[in-house]
Length: 293
Image (tube, rainbow, N blue to C red; front, side, top):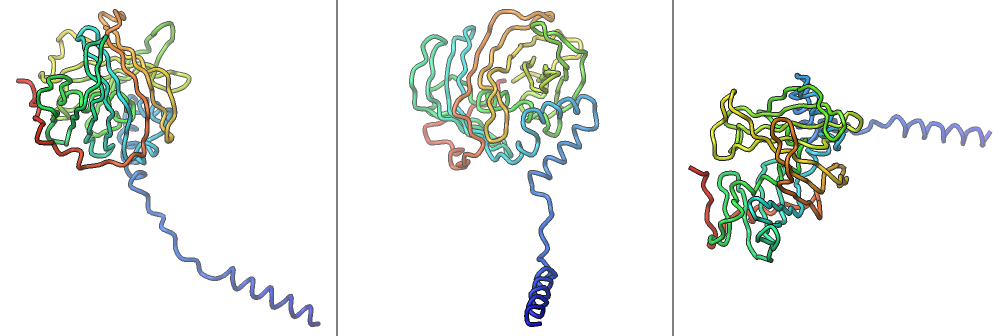
């Protein structure tokens, strides 16, 4: 009888613990989830947007992108035609798109030399220090390397238009094609376009074609288009995002790939590095780079 009573007491005690009201859990979405849902809604309304979304998901997804507070890496660029080669370490705020760089090397395409310099884009102005430096142009380069490395994620931004193009062959492979362009007033180069070669099997962006209209008006619809072909190579996955570490650029004329034009490399990648807003403040030795007239 004592044993039965004890079991009954334990059972009642267990039932009582189970029925204790639990505190309500916060089910509200995080900021990253809200941003992802808003971007997904923008992309879903067009066939081109859906193809960009497929590429983004293959590269890690919208949530992983919006959860990354920063993009930080070494960016090295070489252009034989312009006879320039430089390397910087950049840290970008993925939300505000403000970027600061430590310029590490600078020189000709064959002979870059160590240098101690900085440049940045603070959201309004681009500056470089020391003020005697004339290359690289900080107004152009503060965000360009970041933007190329962040495709396809940045193509989910507001103000982007999408157009599906017929499939194209590149190096014997058939690709799904989508062209991204911009509404007026978006950035310094609203006339820029980016055409993505989306791998039909993996969903990854294997290459892009792009135009550069920095400092110029949007070209007329019937104007001849000068494009560049940029291969995205040697992918790695860091903090849940799959990104290229090597780029090769070629001239692209009348649908044909021309000579090698430029190359770039990305190293020491992180999407979790803290952003130091004080680095956006131009030192006394700096100068602001205006837009070209």
